[in-house]
Image 1: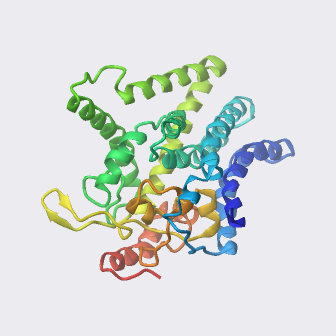
Image 2: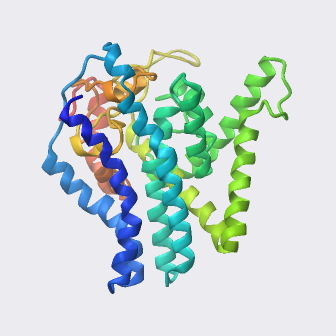
Length: 357
C-alpha cells in the first residue's frame, strides 16, 4: 500500500466537525455561528488546503487485480455504515439541546446535510455500483438514512444510461442555473426510481406492489427510521431527520450539477446516442478533495468504467477539467453569473473537443 492511500482515511475526520462546533459554542461562540462551523470548514478552509496540496494525476494500473481486491479500500467505504449513523444521531440529539435560533437551526441542518452528502451519499455511490450483496445493501442503508434511497436505483439504471442526454435528470443543461436544476433533479430522481423499479418487476411478471419492490422496502425502512427519531426526540427529531435528508440530497444534486454541466453526447438517431466515454463528465485532479471523496472527482473515468473501484479510477488529461475542486465549485455554482462566466467558455471548448486549461 502506498503512503498516499492513507489519505482516504481523511473523510472520517469530518465526522468530528459537529463535536467541534458544540465545543466552540460551549467556549463562547455565538450558537448560530457555531452551528455553521462545519460549513465554514468544508467550504472555507478545505478549498485552501486543496490549493496547498496541489493536484494528483498519477494513475495506478486499473487492471491490477491485487489492488482491486485489497480489503483496505473496501473496508473504508463499508466503515461509513457505522460512522455516519453515529454522526447523524449525535447531530439530531444536539439539535434538540443547543440554544439555536432560526438561523442556527438552519445552519445545523445544512451542516448535517452536507456531512451526509460526504459521509453517506458519496460512499453509497461507490457501494451501489459493486456486485457484492454486502456492498449494495450497505449503500442502500446509507442512502435510506438521508431519505434518498431512490438514488440506488435511478443512478445505476437511469443516470449512467442517460448521462449527458436530455433524458437524464442529473445532467444540467448549458446555461441552466443550479436553482432551476436542483428542484427538477430532486423531483425526477425519485420519480424515475419508482418507474424503473416498476418496469423491472413488470418485465419479470412480478407484482409491483409487493415486497419484491426494492423502492417499497427502502421506503418502509425510512419510515421506521423517521418513527424512531420521532419517538426519541419528538416532533423536533422527526423534522430534523427529514430536513437533513433534503439537505444531503440537495448537496448530491448540486455536485451532479458541477459534474455534468453543459456536456452532451452526440445523437446518432432519435433516442440513441454515442457511447459514454471519459469525455462526457467533468474531471478534477485536486489531491486533497479526491482523498475526502474517495476519488469521486475522477468522475470522467467513473462514467466510462462504472464498476471500477475508486482506488484505481484513472485521470484523463483529455477529459473536461474543472478549474478547482468540488468544494470550491459547489460555492461557485450558487452564484450563477460567476459560474457561467467561468464555466460556459470551458463547456463550449469541451464540446468542441478542446482541452480545458
